Length: 300
Image (cartoon, rainbow, N blue to C red):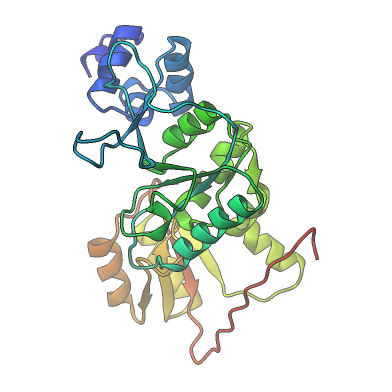
């Protein structure tokens, strides 16, 4: 904060100290009024990169060969990695922590992807941080990075491993949120294209597609103030479905049957602002929901 207030640029020593203290590129960008990519480029220009270390699972009694890996800036002066980067592999991003609105099916998908890659003789690199999953069993993949699923960490592993590509579509919401960020940095995203993911996740794009192919949809709007939300609900009528704009699953979803319900949710359960808007759509009573899962190959 002192450095940001002084209008001085971050030097190598300051960035290295911040990394040793656990600051992410995103946190430094926020403090310095810069972008995460700006801080990343500056950090790499100083050749400041994390090292790959192996978790000692045998308490130093014997040499550790288990595949538990993590990234750190607190390495010895030699900065040696504990592993050698040989044949480039393919990264699979897991689902992270389980929560309401997220299910174990993502772990099944990630493990199936890993096993299929190995079946076709591609080195499989798993990245996840949930110890209660099969995907984080050390013997399921060739490399297991027990790391957070953030843009910074994925980029670090991707470049260190010289990976052939990244599969984001097996882990659900968290890796899907990274798809466009990684795509803009020329990361090779395998499977569903980032543009298609964005077309499904971006409510405006998805809504326009429904209009274009003449598929009916409930009236909806993204709103950033309580007053605007109340006015929209009065226009379309109750009940309405209210959820944060950045959530596509069932997490944090509420149905408001009357203005009091809406006010209670917006003032007590959610922070409504330009940074955290809510999406409100007309809730259709006595409707039948039909869910269809489909897999396509080359458009077929």
